View 1 (spheres, rainbow, N blue to C red):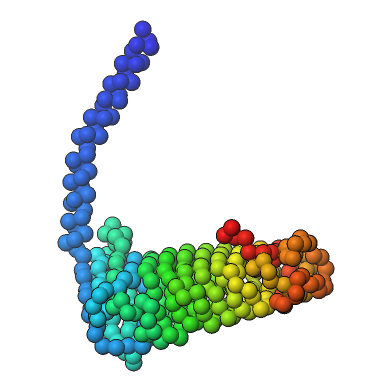
View 2: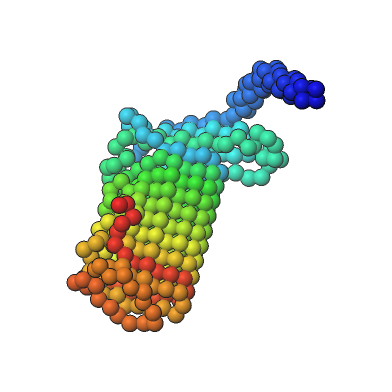
Length: 329
């Protein structure tokens, strides 16, 4: 009898919950519609159009979600939508540079619910800007928020500063610099050919793909750096803490690697010979080249294959691994 009562009670409870859900659904939908109407009513939109030529680009994102796209026309278009009346954007061409800069100050409005609605920046360039040498330099700063979309091609340099937030993009530039204080960056190269690549991570995580360069420098204070399909020339790495992984798709001519703590793992093409000069105070150095797998201690010099690449390794603590490129196999 008790089991029957429990079964009946459970069935009634389930029906009650289902009834509440069905009853509440229209209210929830109306509530969402109501909030969307409030957002649309309180949104402010600014639009800018540029037809004049410029050789430099300076983008500064304070907290918005910014996106870069391309159009079939010959105009650069910028759209800025926000519900926070304390925020604004400045767009102008000054001294040959297109400036797109989000600015804000504190206001009591920023404490209310609508302030959580993301501000949006849409930047649209003519299609020719994507892969032709229209620009000389581009500087991008993201304080918070996000940036997505392909960066325009630059003949000289593209520089990115990420303080916090997220970047998901691709670049085409002779020289590429990125400095990550915190946050997450996922960036690929569209040209796979660079003169200089400089990567510095204070904290956070960065993933790179295709940055083959005559000279590459990776500096990691904390966090994680992963760079696949890299290499192609001189390689410099400095790891204070955290994890650095480099997969070199093309031969390197030389490497200078320092590990204070943490881990550095460098993989090079199978047919690359190396002359390794090493010093390890604590931790480990492991070499897997020329069909040999060895753990090195103390200090010294050792040859692998034709010894064509000069590898200098200094490990204070932590670990360093040098082996063949099998990351994508």
